[in-house]
Length: 172
Image 1: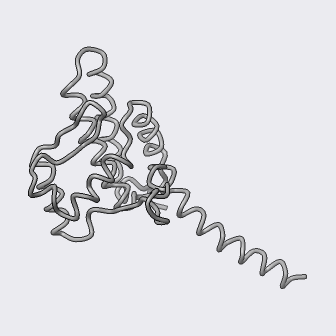
Image 2: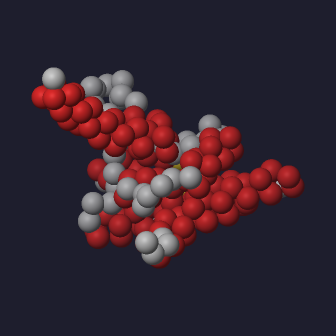
Image 3: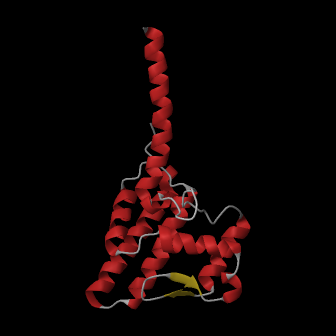
């Protein structure tokens, strides 16, 4: 009986560790857990795998982005837009990051209660959401502008908290 209990607990722990890892990522960016229609792979690209990738992301953002009426984001510079990483950037910006104010507020709410340091893909997506929010704030007027600015500030606070997370902990 003891062996069966031990085996059941081990199985539960293994299943819990697997589900918790996937669930925590799905909670922040649920669309990153969808399947691509054209393949059986998850739609979960990451841009920053090296320092060169970070520099390239910076170049994408400096090259000026075009956001059309349907809120699709594209890189204006044709040479940069033709790179392989630009396709991943397009997927993240147009399929994964939230675009509506409701979705962004939901994200900031989840970020405010997130119990640990963000994974690099979640941090990257949060920064890109913040960039999108800044763009929308700049394009809006009146009450809408205030709403977008508030969302931008909340995302900033969440990222600042994440960067300061090890220093915010109380000593035990």
